Image 1: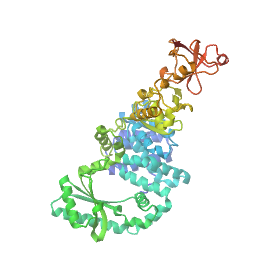
Image 2: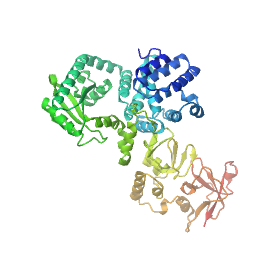
Image 3: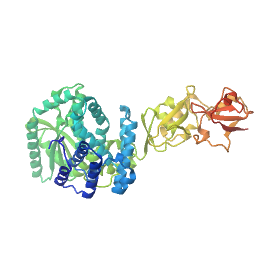
Image 4: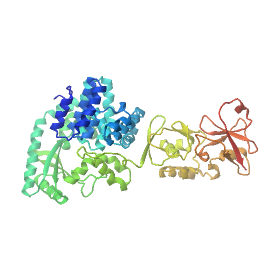
Length: 560
């Protein structure tokens, strides 16, 4: 069947049967019934086509059924009443991910990695991202149905956001197709040129691969080594990236010279047999010593393990060969796919997180959730929706310094989701944080060292204080009042107990300034008002400026 041909429910059932997928027919029919009730024929066709993609890639029954549901039109009570518990998590995940995607429409390349982490950690059930990826693949396959400008932007977004997510989740085959379809849209001339170049010897390569696979298998059998030998061809998009990296410019003919355009894998039962197999391969074919790597003795940073060699094989052809155990191969499928976990520097959780990613495999049939993935991170937005990745428990001080050191040093207040908060208020994923700065402030406050949660923030503050020899008194929150009053004795403002201050959670951490319009002193009765710049301005109670203002004030008094 053509991938874009119109399909129906009977065809879906036929494919499920062919793939021998166990499925709850009652739930499947219920999901399809909702489509018939709420969608047009063309819309139903799209939903079934996307479900067929998931069947094609060997997904489980929950993924197939969930892909037929438009979660955006049903509330949580409806989903909970009509489907199993894990479908409620999928519903919540879709809602959360859709909000994030809407917020981050204009995120730039520097923020893509944080956005991808945020999406995965927020989707609750990873099936959400897999369904999203299947939808992407459907659109790319049916690109002729969309205008050029739309499909170009769609392909670019897919390459930037969804292709790496495929890699993180171990969906390597799906990633290969997504990459090639996107590449064809984004670089049509280069794709055509490469495809034509590679097509010249496609049949020859196929014949050669089978010949070498069979030869290696027979030679290993002579030494009573049970093995599995197979080859793979590099995707066109990967070949393009390799050419650009090695040549610096596009040369399609160079693709024929790439050693790893055709890679062979040999799987054996244990590590000892890996090295024995390597010896046999090197006795059969001359190898290039500088291209040999022992990633078993010295695994890559991401945990990848394998013996990797490039040999001059049959017919004087250079090929790359990887030798590994079945266990290593399983790990390499999912461990490297989650390589971002290894940038966390938290070795304690690595094994747990890798196992989580391995469980994402379509074949596992388990309940997937993302509660432990990136559980030590939060992802917050600037007002321009640039994403900042911070540790759990981080506060506005940590955020300000993550944006820029100057922003941190000159901070005098902060708004979270449009409301003023204290500098020690914990931040949570999804918060929009706006730092209010004072261009006259160029140094941090000393007590911010204690308030900050991230070690890097504390280190930055200490450095600036040390470099500028700031004294303790100059760095107290209320030093501005003390200096302006020119009082010899220490005088501190206090918010009267009978006042409520909704937006100020901790007065001691909010910037306070004396108003220049009336210049209050410790001898005056005073009130406070939140200024437009987010600081508390202290006025004399009878200040003429306040008399014409309708804004609320709060009673303050002096501790003398």
